[in-house]
Length: 425
Image (cartoon, rainbow, N blue to C red; front, top):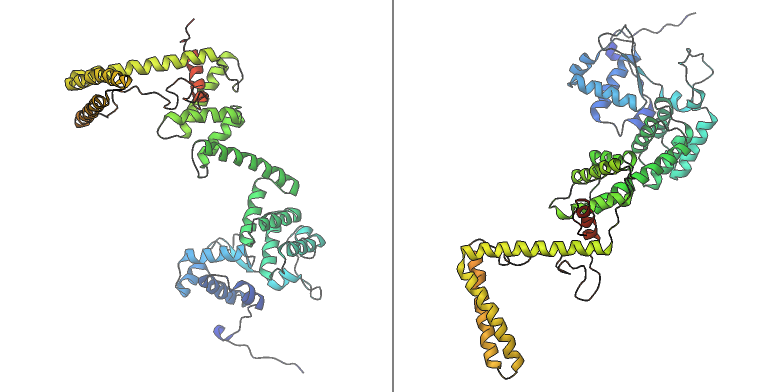
């Protein structure tokens, strides 16, 4: 006796068996539209019926791009594979739904299976090294992995070609930085593989090199007064200074001090300084990091040069004011004479009233002078000597008899001044 079950003729009266693993592990975190695409496509795959992305988009009231994005998402999650062949020219590929139970727990040996695609033994869940990898990851994270995370771990092995050692170290590296998201860890592994790294030793060496570079970046940015991170262009520029031009950190920082005299410190200015130094060193056949030494005598001459230059410029400004505002000259002449009389009265000791009268008159004239200058669009100190350093008035020595903090910068300026042939014999 034979038994036969009547076949259901209406396709929509059939059942589709979506795995509980999908519902429990994959579906909760997935975008709703992507779940709709998965289940709709799965229904047609379950019963071996043809379907295409255009029709799916129309049926689900989505765009075709939405459907394409959904398949990309599920492929990244390891739930499907897109297979490309000449028989599916309408889509360019067909979608193969992965048996999630087999992916996680291995295929049953009781029923013969079709010949699987070639896959490296280390990338199969049954491999001892892979089992050890997942055990170590759980130890590092201090928790049991979900089936979704296991699937992601397998994808790192199969899709990225990462070694178990690299994956384990990546998890440890991210855990130490409080980054336990598998999406974040996967990004780290992807970048390391792209950089040609596949062992813990290679990664450690790579990270040490990066740390050295980022130290350089942070140090130079700080010297320029920036608190932000370096841009990609700035990083390339700094790499060129150190790795190609051969500058030391001290010499680059010397170049950074040159920006002290400009309103907006920038990398292009420093780069130009370093390029000029390199050209000069090559012309002389010298090391780019060699500094020209300046003797104390030569530095003193440079200070003398600065003061005389500043005094001359002040006299020129004063002459300009006297020509345009003669009253200013009258005030200055009176104040000069009154200053002498005031000193004389103070020395006499018995002319307190006279000294006070002179001082009051000088104060009145100083106020008049300031008003005249500002009303004619001049600064009140326009005729004063403008020293580069107000602490020492360009002498190199403060009022307390100490070496001034400006000496380092003046020494660098003197070096250039000497190169221009300004030294007096």
